[in-house]
Image 1 (cartoon, rainbow, N blue to C red):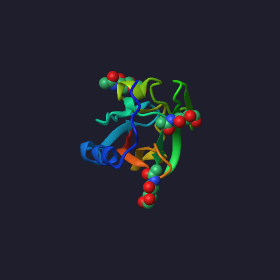
Image 2: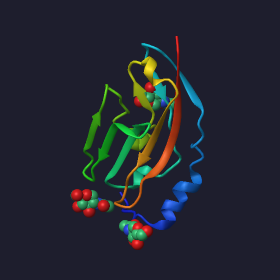
Image 3: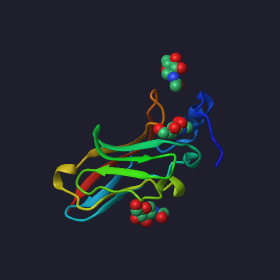
Image 4: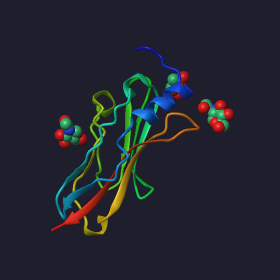
Length: 131
Ligand SMILES: *[C@@H]1O[C@H](CO)[C@@H](O)[C@H](O)[C@H]1NC(C)=O
Ligand SMILES: *[C@@H]1O[C@H](CO)[C@@H](O)[C@H](O)[C@H]1NC(C)=O
Ligand SMILES: *[C@@H]1O[C@H](CO)[C@@H](O)[C@H](O)[C@H]1NC(C)=O
């Protein structure tokens, strides 16, 4: 696997390719699972020591850390999950097992924190509840 330095050019590239920061609302049925889709077009696979955080209105609900040796550490609240191989497939969607009425109009965002300096917004999704 090629080693890629985390350069300003790469950061810029991530910003410019990410057209995913639109706030389309996903409708979730109360008591049912919902998927907040996120397929950022970034070359995440080539990065090492990547940490991703899904945040609900700024509060971390899931944190996944991909180590250089291939280990994945995942921590989450309320059984929120993403696919274990998310970094490889680019499918960083967040699964919530049960939508609660209090989650209406909440904004979920996925940020990547590759370096001490940077956190990059990869996706932002709002959730509307129904039912
Ligand atoms: C990833 O983390 C390991 C262990 O902390 C470190 O040795 C390595 O240099 C890191 N790689 C990058 C690209 O930051
Ligand atoms: C993305 O991953 C989620 C599970 O995390 C899965 O439910 C969904 O079907 C996947 N999307 C695609 C297009 O494979
Ligand atoms: C972090 O940001 C500071 C100021 O913006 C910059 O001087 C420094 O080089 C950056 N470090 C990295 C690792 O990007």
